Image (cartoon, rainbow, N blue to C red; front, side, top):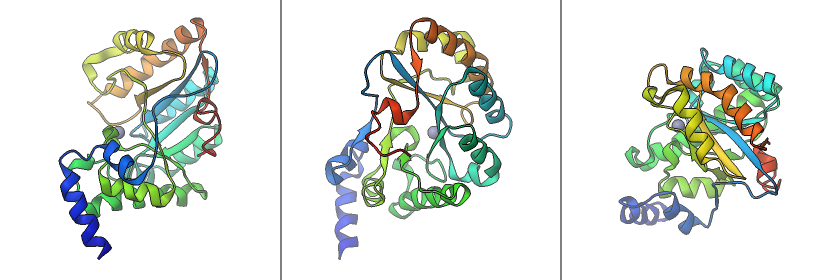
Amino acid sequence: MMGIFLLGLGLILWSYAGWDAGVRLFSGKTIRQGNGPGKRVHLSFDDGPDPRYTPILLDILRQKNVPATFFVVGKRAAAAPDLIRMMREFGHEIGWHTYFHRHAYCLSPWRSMETMRRGKAELEEILGKQLRWFRPPWGASNVFQGWVAKRMGLQVVLWTANAQDWKFSTGKTEIIRRLQSRVKPNTIIVLHDAGGEPGAPGNMLEALPEVIDTLRAAGYEFVSLHEITGGKYGGH
Ligand SMILES: [Zn+2]
């Protein structure tokens, strides 16, 4: 009976079932920016891990001493569990980004929920601990995922600024320029260490050291997601 009710409700909301519909229905809350004092900024990376790009990214973050959050794709994590453990060893936070990385509007109710459950289970098996941060692909969730997120007690994290770095044509210089103009205090930046157009993560990696240096020169401090959200979401 509950299933039929949810299915009917889902169909009614389907055409405009963005994340907001899920939130309204299931009283969740999404994080789009930080809430702390001062000029603080957070770096998050989506769609990894990628055996070619992620190790280079981890190296840059270590050299620059910057904490980040990785929203990883379950299927990719299953293929490279060592990279996930390395993220953790280096002190980064890990969230997940579904298992299949499909757009929520293109999934059946069953696949909508499966991509969330399976992604979470996969990562928790690798890490041996529960995860809390979740970022839906393209920031879009349907009502079924809203329901699962509520039941799992997840915290949905979106972003404040992006640089369209998944497009190869954006290039290094433009990534730097866009982030310089879009970052404000409490900004959560999203970049991509995998996926997107071929070669695009390479541009991001070329731009990243300069992005970090120029923002630091402008007085910004890079903090973890836990810190920039005021520590009130109970970690990750
Ligand atoms: Zn993504």
